[in-house]
Length: 561
Image 1 (cartoon, rainbow, N blue to C red):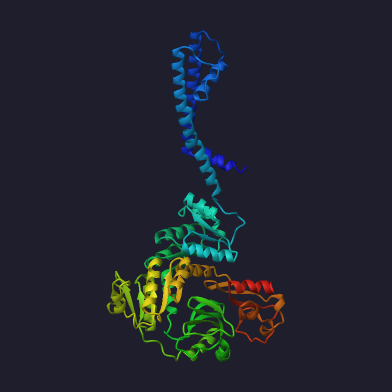
Image 2 (cartoon, rainbow, N blue to C red):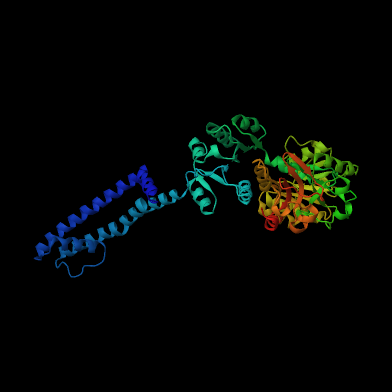
């Protein structure tokens, strides 16, 4: 039964039917040739006075044509031997050249292609629902798939090219063969049952995808990326619920990490009433002290769930030391974060300009974020665009010392490297670190695998284009049980485990045992953000917990559900 689709595909293809006709004509020619040689064999043998049966004649013709030999049936005359040579040569051409070639070209190869094509799925099972439909497989989609698999969310990649579909299918990805502009593709992909459609192609392709999806379903959320700001309105008119400009988001995220701007909190995620924010420690009294000593919970009732330091995230503990390069990850309500800001917003910001290398979309987003904050900056760009103010522009190659010195690398507090070439970013990171061992370097990586390389080159903090896009897309699923805050750092919501019912947070020692932080207790629609650690946990409540992947694994292993 499994071979039936292969047979039908093989026989119904017009090109393959034509190939069958050619192969059939060749076989007819071969049969005619064998018949002619068989009759001629009898005639020549009669001339020599030898008598053989018709079966013997056919046997001799096939043996000679296949070059296996004559055996004991031979001609004695020159005419017979010339005839044998003709049969031998024609047999060599037909049986050793033409027929194998025709068989492979017109039968074997098409048959194997039909079998391969049958391996590529053309629809998803009807039992699959709540899945994510992707229109391709790139760096962003690859990072998103890892998040989906980790949270056990199903997905399917729509692929129009059979070779790509087979390759990705063999690599273990969930794929489906179909054209992106064909409404039937989305019907077979179960778009009515999908949780999200993600299109990360060109602006025109994304528009067509959104418009085609809307022909099938008006309710499924559609998210697309836009390379041009002018495309945002068109994509929304086509039916997109969200239009993302990932480079701009990456630039804004890099701008948040610039040390010395100020010590105020900046929200990076929200889980109900729980807000997750980041705040730099530079130029504040926090530097050089441990979390146990600063007692932020007593002063502002915010929780420090972790600390970013030179690209590495550390789960917060009592002995965690705050350094000048540290970025605190805080959890609290809006009022609690405001209380933190009141304590630390008095500390002076750096008046040194920020150096931005690269004036593309990411560099522009960094500059616009700094403009809003009133922070001075300089942009180094070889091919400057019109948006860059003349007094902020240094035109030239950032690999030249003279250009960097003109841009103020000797005085800058921070350099942000934003080019779209990872190799160039590594090159410039090494160069800037050599010129200024004490400068704070932020880098952009297009591929996740280059993040560690940039750290080794000297970058203090690196953000991946793929990870940034994947995190935003995953959070757009609007799942009530998980929120991705950063690479490997999640906030998740779950019922109070039976082992914790009736125990207080102090008694349970969740942070010490697992590394996770409980930042809120939810009862109905009421959020108790940063709850009293001495109050027992009720049975009908839910916990909002923050931790990295390992901490999350330890939490479920230790307490279970």
